Length: 426
Image 1: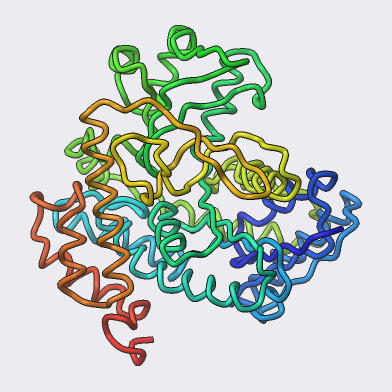
Image 2: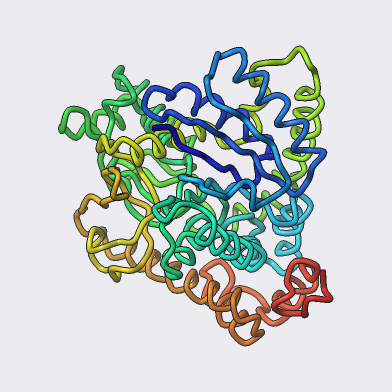
C-alpha cells in the first residue's frame, strides 16, 4: 500500500534534493501522493515545476501535487516533512549581523541568532504539528529539518508529537569518512554524540570495528582543516567535533573573521536567485550543480532513508534528534540529543554510548538548558523568559549586554513575534 508524503516548505530550493532522494527509494517507500506546500505560490510553482519534470524523467509512478492549501497537504498524510525558514533569508541576514554590533557571534542556529530564529520558528512549527495531529493519519510521522533542529525537536516532543529531528552534518561526515577509508558509505556507522550543531564523532565503525584512529592517521590533516581544530587535538581527544564547535572553542577568532567578511546569508541569497532562475527553465529536469553550493548536502539521502526505514521497519542506523532515553549518560531521559539510532516502524531507538568527558558534558548541559529556556520564551512571549534564555547561551551570557541585545533582537523580529508584540505586529 502506498503512502502520502507532505512537504511543508516545498517551495524551498532544497526540494529538488529531496525529490531525487525519494524517487531513488521508490522500492522501499512506495509513495502514491507527494504534496509540496508553501505559502509563496509563485515560488512553489517554480520549484514544483522542476520537481514534476524530474519525476517524469525518472518515471516515478506516484502523483505530485503543489498547493498553498495546508489542509489539502496534510489530510491523510503518513509523513510530514517540515523545512521552513520563517522570515526567509532576510531574517537570517539579521541573525548573522545584528549580534556582531553587540560583540558576539552572528549565526543562524547558534548563539543570539539561533535564539532569534527559535523565537520565530517554534510557535509556527508547533501550530503545524497541531494541524498534522488533526488532519494526518493517527500514526503519521513529523520529520523536522527546520533549524534550529535541536530546539524545534525538543519543542515537538515535549508537546507529545510523533516527531524526529534530522540534520545533514552526520551523513556528510559518514560519506567523507567512507571515502577516506575506501569503503561503501552504508558500511560506516558513526558514534555520534551531543546535540544538534554541538556534536562529536567518537567512533567510526566499519563491520563493528572502530577505525577512528586509522581515519585520523590517514586523513587527519584534511579533517583538521574541515572542522577548524588542530589535528593533534583530534588525536588526543579521539573525537572529531562538528564544524559548529568552532563558535565555542574559537570565539574571538570567529568574531573577528565575521566582522570583516560577508555573511553566509548574503551568499545564499545570491545562490537562491540563480537557482530559481534555473528552475524556471522548462528544459531543466535534473537538479543543477549549483544546488551543492546552497548547503544541505546529502539532505535527500538522510531524509529519504529515514522515511524508508520508518515505513518498512528495516532497522537502519541513522543519526537523528530524539529523546535521550538514557543513551547519553549525564542527561535527562527527556532531553533531546543528536545520536545514532536504530530506525524501525516504531520510531528511532537511540544506541547507548559511553559517558563523554566532563568538559564536553558541561557544554552539552549548558546548551540543553538554553534550549529549554528558549522554548519557554518562544511560547510565553514573556520578556523575562527571553532574557533568561539569552543569558543562558554560552556565546552570549557574561560576554555582552544581554538587555540591549535582547531589545534589538526583539525589535528586529517584531513582524514575526506576535507572542511578544501582539497579533497586530504581523
